[in-house]
Length: 538
Image (cartoon, rainbow, N blue to C red; front, side, top):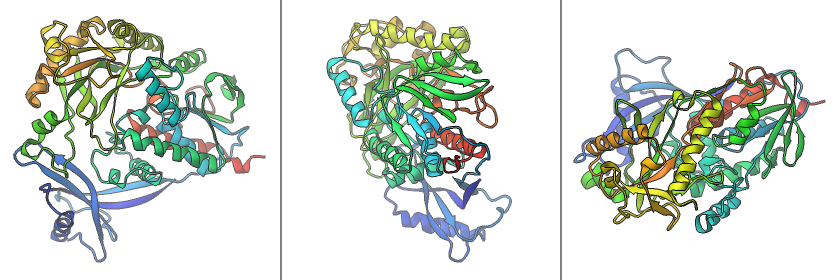
Protein backbone atom coordinates (compact mmCIF):
# COMPACT_ATOMS: atom_id res chain seq x y z
CA UNK A 1 0.00 0.00 0.00
CA UNK A 2 1.07 3.61 -0.51
CA UNK A 3 -0.06 7.13 0.28
CA UNK A 4 -0.25 9.03 -2.98
CA UNK A 5 0.35 12.71 -3.69
CA UNK A 6 -0.96 13.92 -7.05
CA UNK A 7 0.44 16.95 -8.80
CA UNK A 8 -0.19 18.70 -12.08
CA UNK A 9 3.08 19.64 -13.75
CA UNK A 10 3.63 22.55 -16.10
CA UNK A 11 6.91 21.95 -17.91
CA UNK A 12 9.19 23.68 -20.38
CA UNK A 13 9.15 27.19 -18.91
CA UNK A 14 12.40 28.79 -20.06
CA UNK A 15 13.88 31.84 -18.38
CA UNK A 16 17.20 33.64 -18.18
CA UNK A 17 19.39 32.86 -15.18
CA UNK A 18 18.51 36.32 -13.78
CA UNK A 19 14.75 35.71 -13.77
CA UNK A 20 12.96 35.85 -10.41
CA UNK A 21 11.28 32.44 -9.76
CA UNK A 22 8.07 34.32 -8.95
CA UNK A 23 7.88 35.29 -12.60
CA UNK A 24 8.14 31.61 -13.50
CA UNK A 25 5.23 30.79 -11.17
CA UNK A 26 3.20 33.59 -12.78
CA UNK A 27 3.92 32.16 -16.25
CA UNK A 28 2.80 28.69 -15.12
CA UNK A 29 -0.41 30.22 -13.76
CA UNK A 30 -1.04 31.92 -17.10
CA UNK A 31 -0.52 28.64 -18.97
CA UNK A 32 -2.91 26.77 -16.67
CA UNK A 33 -5.53 29.48 -17.10
CA UNK A 34 -5.11 29.32 -20.87
CA UNK A 35 -6.09 25.63 -20.98
CA UNK A 36 -8.74 26.00 -18.24
CA UNK A 37 -6.83 23.88 -15.73
CA UNK A 38 -6.38 26.61 -13.09
CA UNK A 39 -8.71 26.12 -10.13
CA UNK A 40 -9.45 28.31 -7.15
CA UNK A 41 -6.96 27.92 -4.32
CA UNK A 42 -4.47 25.98 -6.47
CA UNK A 43 -0.97 26.13 -4.98
CA UNK A 44 2.00 26.46 -7.34
CA UNK A 45 5.67 25.86 -6.61
CA UNK A 46 8.88 25.15 -8.50
CA UNK A 47 9.09 21.39 -9.02
CA UNK A 48 12.33 21.00 -11.01
CA UNK A 49 14.97 23.27 -12.48
CA UNK A 50 17.57 22.37 -15.09
CA UNK A 51 20.03 24.15 -17.39
CA UNK A 52 19.71 24.33 -21.18
CA UNK A 53 23.16 25.23 -22.49
CA UNK A 54 22.80 24.04 -26.06
CA UNK A 55 23.16 27.66 -27.19
CA UNK A 56 26.13 29.04 -25.26
CA UNK A 57 25.12 32.61 -26.17
CA UNK A 58 21.64 32.15 -24.74
CA UNK A 59 21.90 29.79 -21.75
CA UNK A 60 18.54 29.31 -20.09
CA UNK A 61 17.07 27.74 -17.00
CA UNK A 62 14.20 25.38 -17.73
CA UNK A 63 11.55 25.13 -15.02
CA UNK A 64 8.81 22.68 -14.24
CA UNK A 65 6.14 24.02 -11.89
CA UNK A 66 3.88 21.80 -9.79
CA UNK A 67 0.27 22.65 -9.07
CA UNK A 68 -1.60 21.14 -6.11
CA UNK A 69 -5.19 21.46 -5.05
CA UNK A 70 -8.26 20.62 -7.08
CA UNK A 71 -6.80 18.70 -10.01
CA UNK A 72 -8.53 17.26 -13.07
CA UNK A 73 -8.98 13.49 -13.30
CA UNK A 74 -7.34 13.59 -16.73
CA UNK A 75 -5.79 16.13 -19.04
CA UNK A 76 -7.46 17.43 -22.21
CA UNK A 77 -6.18 15.83 -25.37
CA UNK A 78 -3.67 17.62 -27.55
CA UNK A 79 -2.26 19.81 -24.79
CA UNK A 80 1.51 19.40 -24.47
CA UNK A 81 3.58 20.70 -21.58
CA UNK A 82 1.24 19.36 -18.90
CA UNK A 83 1.35 16.11 -16.97
CA UNK A 84 -0.29 14.49 -13.98
CA UNK A 85 2.13 12.65 -11.67
CA UNK A 86 1.70 10.56 -8.57
CA UNK A 87 4.31 10.47 -5.83
CA UNK A 88 4.02 7.65 -3.33
CA UNK A 89 4.94 7.22 0.31
CA UNK A 90 5.38 3.55 1.27
CA UNK A 91 2.74 2.18 3.63
CA UNK A 92 3.09 -1.51 4.60
CA UNK A 93 0.47 -4.22 4.49
CA UNK A 94 1.60 -6.63 7.18
CA UNK A 95 1.72 -10.33 6.39
CA UNK A 96 0.64 -13.16 8.64
CA UNK A 97 3.73 -15.36 8.73
CA UNK A 98 5.59 -15.11 12.05
CA UNK A 99 9.28 -14.30 12.11
CA UNK A 100 11.50 -16.73 13.97
CA UNK A 101 13.90 -13.88 14.78
CA UNK A 102 14.53 -10.30 13.83
CA UNK A 103 15.19 -9.56 10.16
CA UNK A 104 18.87 -9.01 9.37
CA UNK A 105 19.97 -6.45 6.78
CA UNK A 106 23.53 -6.87 5.45
CA UNK A 107 25.03 -3.66 4.11
CA UNK A 108 24.39 -0.02 5.01
CA UNK A 109 24.50 1.47 1.52
CA UNK A 110 21.37 3.20 0.19
CA UNK A 111 19.39 -0.03 -0.29
CA UNK A 112 20.19 -1.47 3.12
CA UNK A 113 19.87 1.87 4.86
CA UNK A 114 16.40 2.67 3.51
CA UNK A 115 15.21 -0.91 3.97
CA UNK A 116 16.38 -1.02 7.59
CA UNK A 117 14.96 2.44 8.34
CA UNK A 118 11.49 1.49 7.09
CA UNK A 119 11.55 -1.86 8.87
CA UNK A 120 12.49 -0.04 12.07
CA UNK A 121 9.67 2.47 11.59
CA UNK A 122 7.24 -0.40 11.07
CA UNK A 123 8.23 -2.19 14.28
CA UNK A 124 10.47 -4.99 12.96
CA UNK A 125 13.53 -3.97 15.03
CA UNK A 126 15.99 -4.99 12.28
CA UNK A 127 19.62 -5.89 12.84
CA UNK A 128 21.81 -3.97 10.37
CA UNK A 129 25.27 -5.42 9.73
CA UNK A 130 28.09 -3.43 8.14
CA UNK A 131 31.56 -4.89 7.53
CA UNK A 132 33.26 -1.49 7.64
CA UNK A 133 33.42 1.28 10.19
CA UNK A 134 31.38 4.40 10.81
CA UNK A 135 31.62 7.57 8.74
CA UNK A 136 34.37 9.21 10.79
CA UNK A 137 36.35 5.96 10.91
CA UNK A 138 36.08 5.75 7.13
CA UNK A 139 37.35 9.30 6.74
CA UNK A 140 40.31 8.57 9.00
CA UNK A 141 41.09 5.31 7.16
CA UNK A 142 40.95 7.09 3.81
CA UNK A 143 43.24 9.90 4.99
CA UNK A 144 45.76 7.30 6.13
CA UNK A 145 45.55 5.51 2.78
CA UNK A 146 46.06 8.78 0.90
CA UNK A 147 49.00 9.92 3.01
CA UNK A 148 50.74 6.66 3.87
CA UNK A 149 49.51 4.14 1.30
CA UNK A 150 48.20 1.87 4.07
CA UNK A 151 44.97 0.22 2.90
CA UNK A 152 42.32 -1.01 5.35
CA UNK A 153 40.53 -3.74 3.39
CA UNK A 154 37.40 -3.55 5.56
CA UNK A 155 36.97 0.21 6.08
CA UNK A 156 37.61 2.25 2.94
CA UNK A 157 35.94 4.03 0.03
CA UNK A 158 33.87 0.94 -0.78
CA UNK A 159 33.04 -0.44 2.69
CA UNK A 160 31.57 1.26 5.73
CA UNK A 161 28.56 3.27 6.86
CA UNK A 162 26.58 4.53 3.88
CA UNK A 163 28.29 2.32 1.31
CA UNK A 164 30.38 3.48 -1.63
CA UNK A 165 28.08 6.45 -2.28
CA UNK A 166 29.19 8.14 0.95
CA UNK A 167 32.46 9.03 -0.78
CA UNK A 168 31.11 10.33 -4.06
CA UNK A 169 29.43 13.43 -5.40
CA UNK A 170 26.24 12.24 -3.71
CA UNK A 171 24.34 12.38 -7.00
CA UNK A 172 20.63 11.67 -6.67
CA UNK A 173 19.67 11.62 -10.34
CA UNK A 174 18.11 8.45 -11.62
CA UNK A 175 16.87 7.28 -14.99
CA UNK A 176 13.90 5.57 -13.40
CA UNK A 177 10.66 7.44 -12.79
CA UNK A 178 9.70 5.28 -9.87
CA UNK A 179 6.97 6.94 -7.77
CA UNK A 180 9.08 6.36 -4.64
CA UNK A 181 11.87 8.57 -5.99
CA UNK A 182 10.44 11.73 -4.42
CA UNK A 183 10.03 9.89 -1.10
CA UNK A 184 13.74 9.06 -1.14
CA UNK A 185 14.65 12.71 -1.70
CA UNK A 186 12.29 13.89 1.04
CA UNK A 187 13.81 11.34 3.42
CA UNK A 188 17.30 12.63 2.73
CA UNK A 189 16.09 16.17 3.48
CA UNK A 190 14.44 14.94 6.67
CA UNK A 191 17.83 13.72 7.87
CA UNK A 192 19.81 16.81 6.95
CA UNK A 193 20.26 17.08 3.18
CA UNK A 194 19.67 20.55 1.67
CA UNK A 195 16.11 21.22 0.48
CA UNK A 196 17.40 22.22 -2.95
CA UNK A 197 17.66 18.53 -3.88
CA UNK A 198 13.86 18.48 -4.11
CA UNK A 199 13.82 20.87 -7.08
CA UNK A 200 17.12 20.49 -8.92
CA UNK A 201 16.89 18.30 -12.01
CA UNK A 202 20.39 17.01 -11.20
CA UNK A 203 20.43 17.03 -7.40
CA UNK A 204 23.50 16.17 -5.37
CA UNK A 205 24.33 16.19 -1.68
CA UNK A 206 28.13 16.07 -1.64
CA UNK A 207 30.27 13.74 0.42
CA UNK A 208 30.62 16.22 3.31
CA UNK A 209 26.87 16.43 3.93
CA UNK A 210 26.02 12.87 2.91
CA UNK A 211 28.13 11.44 5.73
CA UNK A 212 26.12 13.44 8.28
CA UNK A 213 22.85 12.28 6.70
CA UNK A 214 23.95 8.63 6.90
CA UNK A 215 24.87 8.97 10.58
CA UNK A 216 21.49 10.54 11.34
CA UNK A 217 19.63 7.70 9.62
CA UNK A 218 21.64 5.06 11.49
CA UNK A 219 20.91 6.84 14.78
CA UNK A 220 17.20 6.81 13.98
CA UNK A 221 17.24 3.07 13.27
CA UNK A 222 18.69 2.46 16.71
CA UNK A 223 16.25 4.88 18.38
CA UNK A 224 13.36 2.93 16.88
CA UNK A 225 14.58 -0.35 18.37
CA UNK A 226 16.87 -1.63 15.63
CA UNK A 227 20.52 -2.52 16.02
CA UNK A 228 23.48 -1.36 13.96
CA UNK A 229 26.67 -3.43 14.08
CA UNK A 230 29.69 -2.00 12.28
CA UNK A 231 32.89 -4.04 11.82
CA UNK A 232 30.70 -7.13 11.40
CA UNK A 233 31.39 -9.12 8.26
CA UNK A 234 29.04 -11.73 6.83
CA UNK A 235 30.89 -15.05 6.48
CA UNK A 236 28.19 -17.63 5.74
CA UNK A 237 24.51 -18.51 5.84
CA UNK A 238 22.80 -21.15 7.94
CA UNK A 239 19.97 -22.54 5.81
CA UNK A 240 17.57 -25.50 5.95
CA UNK A 241 15.58 -26.46 2.84
CA UNK A 242 15.69 -22.98 1.37
CA UNK A 243 14.89 -21.25 4.65
CA UNK A 244 17.55 -19.07 6.24
CA UNK A 245 17.89 -19.66 9.98
CA UNK A 246 20.92 -17.53 10.91
CA UNK A 247 23.96 -15.74 9.54
CA UNK A 248 27.54 -16.44 10.54
CA UNK A 249 29.73 -13.38 11.00
CA UNK A 250 33.24 -12.72 12.22
CA UNK A 251 31.59 -11.74 15.51
CA UNK A 252 29.54 -14.89 15.90
CA UNK A 253 26.25 -16.36 14.73
CA UNK A 254 23.14 -14.16 14.59
CA UNK A 255 19.60 -15.61 14.28
CA UNK A 256 17.72 -14.22 11.29
CA UNK A 257 14.01 -14.53 10.59
CA UNK A 258 14.65 -12.97 7.18
CA UNK A 259 17.73 -11.68 5.41
CA UNK A 260 18.19 -8.67 3.14
CA UNK A 261 21.37 -8.90 1.06
CA UNK A 262 22.27 -5.29 0.27
CA UNK A 263 25.96 -6.08 0.03
CA UNK A 264 27.15 -3.51 -2.54
CA UNK A 265 29.00 -4.06 -5.80
CA UNK A 266 32.46 -4.60 -4.27
CA UNK A 267 31.77 -7.39 -1.77
CA UNK A 268 33.59 -9.99 -3.85
CA UNK A 269 34.28 -12.34 -0.96
CA UNK A 270 30.56 -12.28 -0.12
CA UNK A 271 29.73 -13.03 -3.74
CA UNK A 272 32.08 -16.03 -3.60
CA UNK A 273 30.36 -17.27 -0.43
CA UNK A 274 26.90 -16.91 -1.98
CA UNK A 275 28.01 -18.89 -5.01
CA UNK A 276 28.63 -21.85 -2.70
CA UNK A 277 24.91 -21.82 -1.87
CA UNK A 278 22.12 -22.63 -4.33
CA UNK A 279 21.45 -19.03 -5.41
CA UNK A 280 20.59 -18.39 -9.02
CA UNK A 281 23.25 -15.93 -10.16
CA UNK A 282 23.95 -14.63 -13.63
CA UNK A 283 26.87 -12.54 -14.90
CA UNK A 284 26.04 -9.17 -16.41
CA UNK A 285 27.61 -6.53 -18.59
CA UNK A 286 29.45 -3.66 -16.92
CA UNK A 287 32.05 -1.07 -17.93
CA UNK A 288 35.71 -0.23 -17.34
CA UNK A 289 37.90 2.74 -18.10
CA UNK A 290 39.63 5.74 -16.57
CA UNK A 291 38.92 9.06 -14.87
CA UNK A 292 39.40 12.15 -17.02
CA UNK A 293 40.29 15.49 -15.42
CA UNK A 294 39.96 19.02 -16.78
CA UNK A 295 40.03 22.41 -15.12
CA UNK A 296 36.46 23.12 -14.04
CA UNK A 297 36.82 26.67 -15.36
CA UNK A 298 37.56 25.25 -18.83
CA UNK A 299 34.46 23.06 -18.75
CA UNK A 300 32.33 25.98 -17.53
CA UNK A 301 33.52 28.22 -20.37
CA UNK A 302 33.16 25.50 -22.98
CA UNK A 303 29.56 24.77 -21.98
CA UNK A 304 28.24 28.12 -20.69
CA UNK A 305 30.24 30.65 -22.72
CA UNK A 306 29.81 34.17 -21.32
CA UNK A 307 27.40 32.79 -18.71
CA UNK A 308 30.20 30.80 -17.01
CA UNK A 309 30.35 31.57 -13.32
CA UNK A 310 26.75 32.79 -13.08
CA UNK A 311 25.59 31.95 -9.53
CA UNK A 312 22.22 30.64 -10.75
CA UNK A 313 23.89 28.03 -12.96
CA UNK A 314 26.55 26.52 -10.72
CA UNK A 315 29.31 24.53 -12.33
CA UNK A 316 28.72 22.89 -15.69
CA UNK A 317 28.05 19.16 -15.90
CA UNK A 318 28.09 16.84 -18.87
CA UNK A 319 26.94 13.40 -19.94
CA UNK A 320 28.47 12.14 -23.18
CA UNK A 321 28.28 8.95 -25.21
CA UNK A 322 29.69 7.68 -28.48
CA UNK A 323 29.26 4.66 -30.71
CA UNK A 324 32.81 3.64 -31.60
CA UNK A 325 31.66 0.69 -33.77
CA UNK A 326 33.40 -1.76 -31.44
CA UNK A 327 32.35 -0.66 -27.92
CA UNK A 328 29.93 1.85 -26.53
CA UNK A 329 31.85 4.53 -24.63
CA UNK A 330 30.25 7.04 -22.27
CA UNK A 331 30.98 9.36 -19.38
CA UNK A 332 29.70 8.44 -15.94
CA UNK A 333 29.55 10.00 -12.47
CA UNK A 334 30.80 13.43 -13.49
CA UNK A 335 32.05 15.33 -10.43
CA UNK A 336 32.19 19.12 -10.89
CA UNK A 337 34.87 20.70 -8.74
CA UNK A 338 35.77 17.27 -7.41
CA UNK A 339 38.69 14.92 -7.03
CA UNK A 340 39.72 11.47 -8.19
CA UNK A 341 39.76 9.17 -5.17
CA UNK A 342 41.70 6.03 -4.32
CA UNK A 343 38.90 3.45 -4.16
CA UNK A 344 40.77 0.16 -3.69
CA UNK A 345 39.33 -2.39 -1.29
CA UNK A 346 41.69 -5.30 -1.99
CA UNK A 347 45.43 -5.42 -1.50
CA UNK A 348 47.49 -5.25 -4.66
CA UNK A 349 44.92 -3.41 -6.76
CA UNK A 350 44.38 0.20 -7.87
CA UNK A 351 40.82 1.46 -8.33
CA UNK A 352 39.68 5.02 -9.02
CA UNK A 353 36.40 6.81 -8.45
CA UNK A 354 35.18 10.40 -8.25
CA UNK A 355 34.10 12.50 -5.27
CA UNK A 356 33.11 16.09 -4.61
CA UNK A 357 31.87 18.21 -1.74
CA UNK A 358 28.54 19.99 -1.69
CA UNK A 359 30.12 23.29 -2.74
CA UNK A 360 31.87 21.63 -5.69
CA UNK A 361 34.60 24.24 -5.27
CA UNK A 362 37.62 22.18 -6.28
CA UNK A 363 39.83 23.28 -9.16
CA UNK A 364 39.29 20.20 -11.35
CA UNK A 365 36.31 18.49 -12.91
CA UNK A 366 36.46 14.72 -13.32
CA UNK A 367 34.36 11.95 -14.78
CA UNK A 368 34.72 8.31 -15.66
CA UNK A 369 35.23 7.56 -19.35
CA UNK A 370 34.07 4.00 -19.75
CA UNK A 371 33.90 1.30 -22.39
CA UNK A 372 31.34 -1.49 -22.29
CA UNK A 373 32.43 -4.96 -21.17
CA UNK A 374 30.46 -7.79 -22.74
CA UNK A 375 29.81 -11.10 -21.03
CA UNK A 376 31.89 -12.96 -23.58
CA UNK A 377 34.90 -10.78 -22.65
CA UNK A 378 35.28 -12.69 -19.40
CA UNK A 379 33.79 -16.11 -20.14
CA UNK A 380 30.19 -15.29 -19.16
CA UNK A 381 30.46 -16.62 -15.60
CA UNK A 382 30.03 -14.73 -12.30
CA UNK A 383 33.54 -15.59 -11.09
CA UNK A 384 34.91 -14.77 -14.53
CA UNK A 385 33.48 -11.26 -14.19
CA UNK A 386 35.05 -10.77 -10.75
CA UNK A 387 38.40 -12.15 -11.91
CA UNK A 388 38.33 -9.85 -14.94
CA UNK A 389 37.95 -6.77 -12.72
CA UNK A 390 40.71 -7.98 -10.41
CA UNK A 391 43.14 -8.53 -13.30
CA UNK A 392 42.71 -4.96 -14.48
CA UNK A 393 43.11 -3.55 -10.97
CA UNK A 394 46.30 -5.56 -10.39
CA UNK A 395 47.66 -4.49 -13.77
CA UNK A 396 47.01 -0.84 -12.84
CA UNK A 397 48.76 -1.44 -9.50
CA UNK A 398 51.84 -2.70 -11.32
CA UNK A 399 51.69 0.13 -13.87
CA UNK A 400 51.64 2.65 -11.03
CA UNK A 401 54.70 1.21 -9.32
CA UNK A 402 53.12 -1.32 -6.92
CA UNK A 403 52.62 1.14 -4.07
CA UNK A 404 49.01 2.21 -4.77
CA UNK A 405 50.12 5.10 -6.97
CA UNK A 406 47.77 5.32 -9.93
CA UNK A 407 48.93 5.23 -13.56
CA UNK A 408 48.26 8.56 -15.26
CA UNK A 409 48.65 9.75 -18.83
CA UNK A 410 47.89 12.98 -20.63
CA UNK A 411 45.19 12.84 -23.26
CA UNK A 412 47.79 13.98 -25.80
CA UNK A 413 50.02 11.00 -25.03
CA UNK A 414 47.07 8.64 -24.93
CA UNK A 415 45.75 9.69 -28.34
CA UNK A 416 49.25 9.58 -29.87
CA UNK A 417 49.95 6.18 -28.25
CA UNK A 418 53.11 7.39 -26.56
CA UNK A 419 54.00 7.95 -22.91
CA UNK A 420 56.15 10.08 -20.65
CA UNK A 421 54.58 13.56 -20.62
CA UNK A 422 54.20 14.75 -17.03
CA UNK A 423 51.04 16.58 -15.89
CA UNK A 424 51.50 20.34 -16.25
CA UNK A 425 48.62 22.85 -16.40
CA UNK A 426 46.13 20.32 -15.06
CA UNK A 427 47.41 18.54 -11.96
CA UNK A 428 46.06 15.17 -10.76
CA UNK A 429 43.91 15.06 -7.62
CA UNK A 430 44.43 11.34 -6.89
CA UNK A 431 46.53 10.99 -3.72
CA UNK A 432 48.87 13.98 -3.63
CA UNK A 433 52.07 12.81 -5.28
CA UNK A 434 50.51 9.39 -5.77
CA UNK A 435 50.53 9.03 -9.56
CA UNK A 436 53.06 7.80 -12.10
CA UNK A 437 52.98 8.26 -15.84
CA UNK A 438 52.18 5.05 -17.68
CA UNK A 439 50.43 3.93 -20.83
CA UNK A 440 46.77 3.02 -20.40
CA UNK A 441 47.43 0.09 -22.74
CA UNK A 442 49.57 -1.46 -19.99
CA UNK A 443 46.52 -2.20 -17.86
CA UNK A 444 43.51 -1.99 -20.20
CA UNK A 445 43.08 -4.31 -23.21
CA UNK A 446 43.27 -2.56 -26.57
CA UNK A 447 39.64 -3.18 -27.41
CA UNK A 448 38.74 -0.73 -24.62
CA UNK A 449 41.52 1.83 -25.09
CA UNK A 450 40.95 1.98 -28.85
CA UNK A 451 37.26 2.61 -28.26
CA UNK A 452 38.02 5.32 -25.71
CA UNK A 453 40.46 7.00 -28.13
CA UNK A 454 37.78 7.24 -30.80
CA UNK A 455 35.24 8.47 -28.25
CA UNK A 456 37.51 11.21 -26.88
CA UNK A 457 37.86 12.71 -30.34
CA UNK A 458 34.07 12.66 -30.70
CA UNK A 459 33.63 14.21 -27.26
CA UNK A 460 36.08 16.97 -28.24
CA UNK A 461 33.70 17.90 -31.05
CA UNK A 462 30.83 18.15 -28.56
CA UNK A 463 32.65 20.06 -25.81
CA UNK A 464 35.54 22.26 -26.92
CA UNK A 465 38.73 21.20 -25.20
CA UNK A 466 37.44 17.89 -23.89
CA UNK A 467 40.27 16.14 -25.77
CA UNK A 468 42.84 18.81 -24.87
CA UNK A 469 46.38 17.36 -24.85
CA UNK A 470 46.98 18.34 -21.21
CA UNK A 471 43.79 16.79 -19.85
CA UNK A 472 44.55 13.79 -17.65
CA UNK A 473 43.46 10.15 -17.63
CA UNK A 474 43.92 8.21 -14.38
CA UNK A 475 43.23 4.48 -14.14
CA UNK A 476 41.68 2.22 -13.56
CA UNK A 477 37.92 2.46 -12.99
CA UNK A 478 36.28 -0.97 -12.64
CA UNK A 479 33.59 -0.63 -9.95
CA UNK A 480 30.94 1.06 -12.07
CA UNK A 481 28.27 -1.52 -11.25
CA UNK A 482 27.87 -5.05 -9.98
CA UNK A 483 29.35 -7.68 -12.33
CA UNK A 484 26.53 -10.10 -11.57
CA UNK A 485 22.85 -10.30 -10.63
CA UNK A 486 21.30 -12.45 -7.89
CA UNK A 487 18.01 -13.53 -9.43
CA UNK A 488 14.83 -12.96 -7.49
CA UNK A 489 11.10 -13.56 -7.85
CA UNK A 490 8.28 -11.07 -8.28
CA UNK A 491 8.07 -10.99 -4.47
CA UNK A 492 11.72 -9.84 -4.33
CA UNK A 493 12.83 -13.17 -2.85
CA UNK A 494 16.00 -14.87 -4.01
CA UNK A 495 15.04 -17.72 -6.34
CA UNK A 496 14.84 -20.93 -4.30
CA UNK A 497 14.68 -19.17 -0.91
CA UNK A 498 11.70 -18.36 1.30
CA UNK A 499 13.14 -15.49 3.35
CA UNK A 500 16.20 -14.05 1.58
CA UNK A 501 15.87 -10.75 -0.28
CA UNK A 502 18.68 -9.57 -2.62
CA UNK A 503 18.60 -5.78 -2.86
CA UNK A 504 20.22 -2.79 -4.43
CA UNK A 505 23.22 -2.28 -6.64
CA UNK A 506 25.22 -5.19 -5.28
CA UNK A 507 22.45 -7.60 -6.19
CA UNK A 508 22.29 -6.15 -9.69
CA UNK A 509 19.05 -4.17 -9.34
CA UNK A 510 20.14 -0.55 -9.17
CA UNK A 511 22.63 1.92 -10.59
CA UNK A 512 23.20 4.78 -8.18
CA UNK A 513 22.09 6.16 -4.82
CA UNK A 514 18.46 6.94 -5.64
CA UNK A 515 17.65 3.76 -7.54
CA UNK A 516 19.34 1.65 -4.85
CA UNK A 517 17.35 3.42 -2.14
CA UNK A 518 14.13 2.87 -4.08
CA UNK A 519 14.94 -0.82 -4.37
CA UNK A 520 15.49 -0.94 -0.61
CA UNK A 521 12.04 0.61 -0.13
CA UNK A 522 10.41 -2.01 -2.35
CA UNK A 523 12.22 -4.86 -0.60
CA UNK A 524 11.04 -3.54 2.78
CA UNK A 525 7.45 -3.49 1.49
CA UNK A 526 7.81 -7.04 0.15
CA UNK A 527 9.19 -8.33 3.45
CA UNK A 528 6.43 -6.63 5.41
CA UNK A 529 3.79 -8.08 3.09
CA UNK A 530 4.92 -11.59 4.03
CA UNK A 531 5.89 -11.39 7.70
CA UNK A 532 4.32 -10.11 10.88
CA UNK A 533 6.23 -7.24 12.40
CA UNK A 534 8.38 -7.71 15.48
CA UNK A 535 5.76 -6.29 17.81
CA UNK A 536 3.60 -9.33 17.05
CA UNK A 537 6.29 -11.94 17.72
CA UNK A 538 5.27 -14.56 20.26
